Image (cartoon, rainbow, N blue to C red; front, side, top):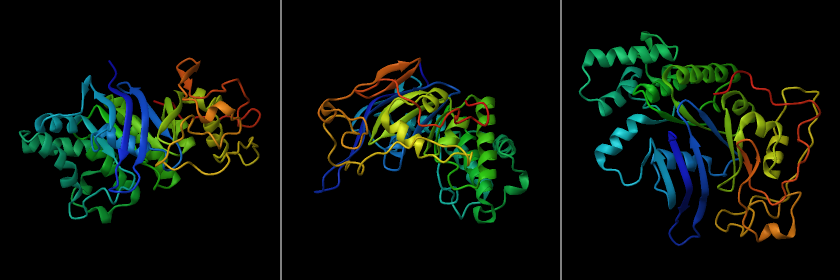
Length: 334
């Protein structure tokens, strides 16, 4: 049994007289305990909506989210509260996610008061101090307000708040996008250490290919509300099989200024999510499009060990990376 199972997930935003927005369209994946799955894709691909569905902040239009073997739909008040203790989130903007009127100690304490109200005050304080130390902050930060912290320190407080209840799964929604490079590296290292120590599973939402190559062992590539390719991160990045994945990788900046990549162009613009294509979602933009792509529904096919892609034209093609080039992970992915 997987820690998290997402099956044929759909979500439609209804807008009162305006055409509905089909934000998520049949997404399926699993996350094991202690594993990181990255969701990547350009803005508007549905990554954050999937994260909110996993957290139960949105109700699916169709499909199911199962956490620790149980569906999260239709839970009672007590069951929902128990779920929140095990299923947490770290948001993209650290300052906006913290209450500016609360001190750091109160921010971190709040989940414990809600989810474990019978915990003695002395034990609760020990847990807060231990968690703060785990994210690299000392007791002197307990009485500070968010405005008195740097961006990296604010994000560490957000992480401490997320893990203080000892969750099983954390959704990381672009947790490092607002941080500079050095702080980003330290934050990712911290998340990796917490994962090793606590066995936390992560759903890592990002558009940064290089960060994903460092932090995640598996990746799911999203386009127009669908997963178009999924597999081990190293395999997908080194041997992308879907045309959209190839185009996405070819647009990523290389750390080597002398490297040359094969540019994979896509025609036109992303289709409107209010009127989805009948066939492949990339039809009309794809460089290897065939006539049947516009009308034929596309299913995932196995293209390697634990590696699938949803394309009607899956013959082997060269990587968009230059000769001998690879997106090498900075550390051991989780």
